[in-house]
Image (cartoon, rainbow, N blue to C red):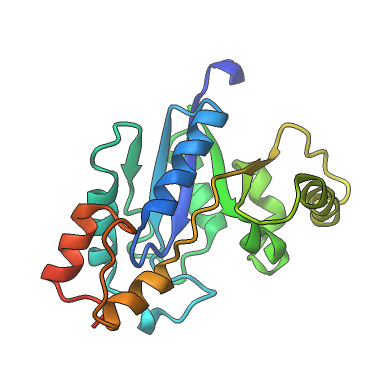
Length: 210
């Protein structure tokens, strides 16, 4: 199959503990900017950078993702990392490539994560399995960010041509984080309009983050 005919799919991984409106907005803006047919949300099973004992159960996080994206026909939830311990991104990309050779994948990562990309296991191989999309909600000017981004790409993949494989996108700066949502719930305060209504109801009914 001609590479130009491949279905274009974004991959947005994370703990999603819980998923919030900024996650959805990032996915939508990347989908639109890069003409992606779909964006797949992949809750992390056992992320190497975080303590798993502090995470909500995988089943709760997956269900909240499904509730968060249910009104968008271009979004899909995958449980591919359910049994992964630890859930390294490269292994996930390899599995996706093996299962869906007809898809052109775009891995979506935040600016803060990208700045520490050298700590990701075997990050040098990521571009063999997917294109990389770095998104930023940073307050710096575009010129400052672009220069830092280009230097980082050059440092990470020194002798590897990255043209057409690594993208940088500015997205709407929404000051929402999962940690902030959890803190508000624990404090007994409202999280309405920070998370989708279905996620809000699930959190309250299952008494998460108390």
